[in-house]
Every structure is written in C-alpha cells, then in structure tokens.
Image (tube, rainbow, N blue to C red):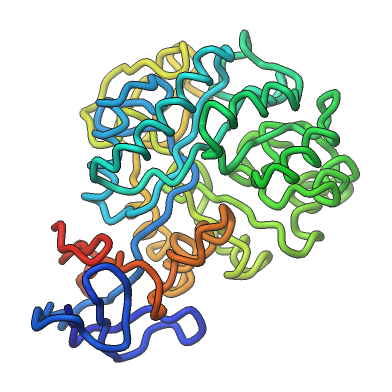
Length: 376
C-alpha cells in the first residue's frame, strides 16, 4: 500500500509531505503492492496508544470477561486507538488475577480489534486519602509477592502499576517491579516532594493522571508534581477530556514538562460511547451527564472520563496544544513508557503499519489502517 498526498507526522519535524508505504504488515521504503490510499486533505498520524483507561461501550476491563475485552478492543480500534493497555481497579486479588488471566488469554487468541499490549494495575496499592473513585475496602499495601503472582497470571503482560510511595514497603516494591520490567507510576497518593522524589530515584518513571489523585502543587510544598518535574525521564499522564483539568493547566504542563514527557490518557469508563445514566464501576455506581462522570451520592468526586483518547487529542488541540505535540503525547510517548516504541508510536520504516488519516478541517477520522490492513 502507498498512502499519498497527506501531511505525515514526524517525531522531529512535526508534519512533512511524503508518502507512507507498507508491505502489508510493516512500514517500508517502497510499497509492497499496487494499492493506493489517497490522503489528500489529511494528516497521517500513528495509531494512538492508550495506557490508562477502564472501558467503553458498556464494558469494563475489570469485569474480566472475554466478550467484554473483545468489545473494548473493537471500539478502541474504531476510534483510531490501535494499542491499548487497559487499567484494572482496586479489587480483591482473585478478581485482579482473573483480569490478568483474561489479558493473557485474549492475547493468545489474537481475535482482532486494537492490540491489547498488556494491563495497567491502577490499584490496589494506593492511599486511602486519595483513593478517589477506587473502592477503599480492597486497598492493599504494596506487596511484591502479590505482584509476582499477578504477573504470572498475566504471563508477563502487566506493563504498568500505580503505587502510592508513602505506603509501607513501597520503595522495595518499586525496585522489585522495575526489576520485573514493569513501569511504575506514582499516583493516588498524599506523598510529599521528598517521598515522591525517592520513589522516582528508586525506579518509578511515570505519574498517574497528574493533578488528579494527589496534593496540589504549592510554592512551599511542590509534592509529586514538583518531584516529577525535577526528575529527568519521568513522564506525566494528563486526562484531557475538558473536565478533569482546566485548559490553562494543560498548556502549562506541556510548557513545564516539554512535549517529550507528557502522556495523554482517556481514563475512560464503560459509559464511554453510551447514553447518560448510571453505571457500575469498581463495586460502586457512577452517574454520567454529558461528558462528566461522578460517584453516585458524591457529585464532587470525578470517576474517570467518558471521552475516547482520540477525543482527548482533539480537546488538547482546542486548548491550544500544537497538533504535532498532542499527537506525540498520544502515540510515541505512551508507547515509549511501556516499552513498545520499537514497533509503535511513529511512522518510521520497520514499525508496524498502524496509522490513522484525520481530516484537516476538524480532525475527524477519514481512515484507519491497522497492521497494514484498512479497517475503517
């Protein structure tokens, strides 16, 4: 396939005029057949990578059903999200084990939809004070043997784990998880600057939904946000749905951390792609009105988003983030954070041929190509 006439995303140059070629699976220097895809009037960008979301179209990753995970993967691909690392909730170990086993089984089937590259354990190793929408009944101190059991159940597919570094045993947990090849993220925490800095020095390289689930930055108490900024290589997630974070803070964070260190996430729930109403979430109930989801009875507690990652990319651009920077934050940066940037996240020769054509006027989807095959 040869894709012609589009403005193609380039990690260093932003957007350039060139063809994109595939051999049917990988990106190549020359086309492997006579098929031509006209990208006139389009941006050509890598398929998006979401490393933090919970569900969509009425399904939740934590339900651990094969059918639900397949529906999630199918919907995400339809939105131009080609690689996904869905997040589990704070739940009992037997349910977390079922989640991990479901990921491993799904990957073995290779049944289509967006590729489920692994699992993000957002719980249960979190702080009670900043649990947010997580179920406090199932919080657990950082536990290396538990993590090892879950990684075994996932057949090595746990890619990311969130931990509150002030919890007992957290520093040893961070070092052990890092040694296991798992990216460690600091989040749902009341850690001060020194504790967070120690966590990053112990091997954590990620901050879970910056600003949400942690103390606010203060000029005498910079906390997790200041510690993340001060530690080169630490990447920060942002929920850019227009609800969780004010546009000024989105712009500030890109300026503060630089385009290389920001990861846009959706943190989307099962209500994404569904009508307003009440939905179960991690043993609790959430209520959705428009693009806002809250815990039933606690209207001040946000419970994730109902916006896809592609919607978050568009929202970032509306907030004034340059398109190339927003694309990088939805593609290369998250791919790099979980170690799949050798095959995803850019349109370089040798990478998997997963990319999206966006109409220039409104960033709507023109076409989706996944591993060399036009799927929409």
